Length: 153
Image (tube, rainbow, N blue to C red; front, side, top):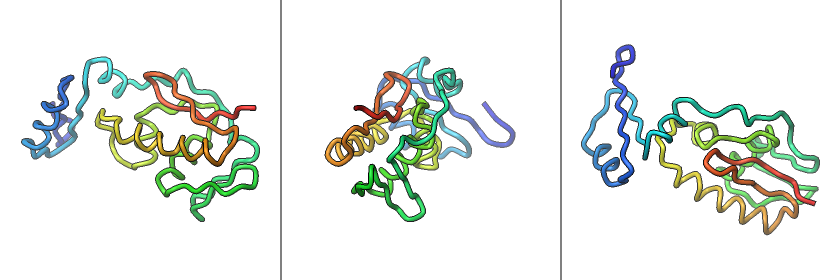
């Protein structure tokens, strides 16, 4: 498919090796979209936005992305720059469910290609640090959709 003067290549395959081989063999002059199945392709092309709610950061959370610092109830959180960006996105609209695609685009400033492993790995590290230092603040998974920030009593 050609969009304007750029090619759009879509590969739908559950086999990761097939998708990786395709990426190595292609020298795309446009956008390459890789996904495991048609449901994932639909999710990428038509993201689910009806789960979004409004809300700001929870009381006690301050994320300073300019000063690269996050505090929860006055206590500094030892986060990497990447973890800080993820927390900042989640805190920006804490009641909102962030889809994998939206979070990937916001944090990595890149096009989501359907492989969420890097996102899940980074989220696992963030969750571990929140459990260790931010009592009551956690990231919830909305299965198959994405993540949202939650405050527990």
